[in-house]
Length: 238
Image (tube, rainbow, N blue to C red; front, side, top):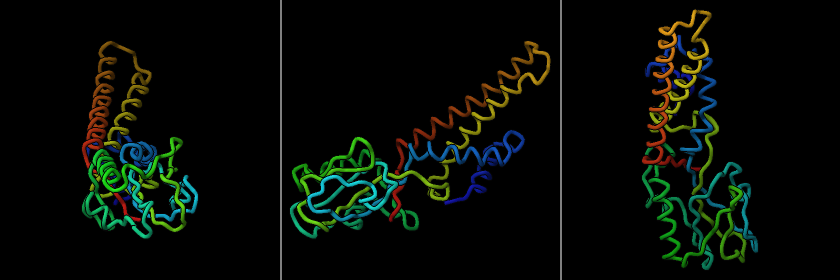
């Protein structure tokens, strides 16, 4: 985990010079890029919550985290009291601890496959359904008692850059570099004439610079997306 100053240093090492974008501009870009980073590579957390008798729908608040975006995995036993799907039992199957207090899981597709197989094997496919409106979920069948433990694995947006795991630093810097290159290209294009005579040679010079920065931005964005799709999802422990 790193702070903003560390990421600025990382971008400088990648060739984003202060003469192209100063620290203030880069800091603003870091804040802007965090929401997009969370869409592609959110935090993946796990926790348990208790059922409420005769209540089928559970909101993020009732599940214990108002920041829940999507529930990826929900495990509970609607037929036996006290069968808790805890982290040591489930995450031992999905991954291994990698960074103090955090887990790194297989791709979300693999998580979904494990989820489906587990329910088909244990409960005949019964379990839960996500609410199409976001974070909430429905338990199936309707819980008939209070206090049964429900284990969930879910996504959550990053609240600050310090929450990004150090093993994801390179991916995060790819996205930041893409944002920086896009900003530089826009500024080069806007300042292209600078009051000078628009000779064909000068226009070619400006167009070449803009194309360079735009091409670099696209390359880094493509790399970021490819790594997110093929890599590991970070799972923080609550």
